Length: 274
Image (tube, rainbow, N blue to C red):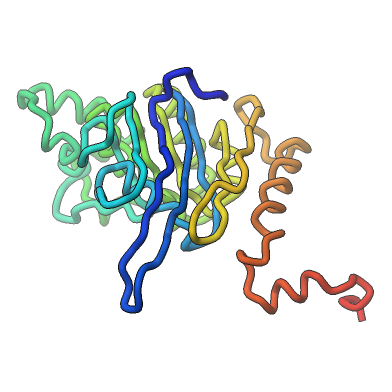
């Protein structure tokens, strides 16, 4: 999917440095990306390349950076209800019920009590947890808890949903089920989505475009269009081709690999077979 003439989100020459004991650490350098209304973009790259930092900047948790980030042409200024975020850990409050945890997403919304309750119930239904609205987090499976976190991220009806490795802590089967759930929720909510993930297959399965970041400082190495129709078949030849393309971008750069691994990779096959 290509971005609209007036993109919803624009990163323009974004850079980020962190102060460390012996100077500065450059996390992101000259990052430029436009995301269209309704688009699903995934960012992949090695640990430490600035993926999660980009989400923190967009959500408004950190306002000290170079360049600018725009939403509808206006600079991001602090946290806003047009942006919701879901983290790898569900971060539910254990003493609150499912409904109460989701309602926290409306804490800054000027709503009457009845409308607040209606909105919460609507999003409980959206993630398929109607029978668990009064359950506590310890009574939920990992996948159910993450669905609560997604509902909390969506309940204020944001235009943009940010996902920071949202399924990274789940087992493989639950992870695939949650990916299917996310696509179904996104289809119903019609929301622009930016996903950070280490999982190349997850990125291909979910996204319209995949952005490959270079190692720190994070810069765009390549943007790959995912032109497969939904529902996507993980076993298809085209899915496999895209997977190999992205893995090639990630692994054929010695900066992603420990030196010993890079050296072994470059040895002749006949030598490795000895």
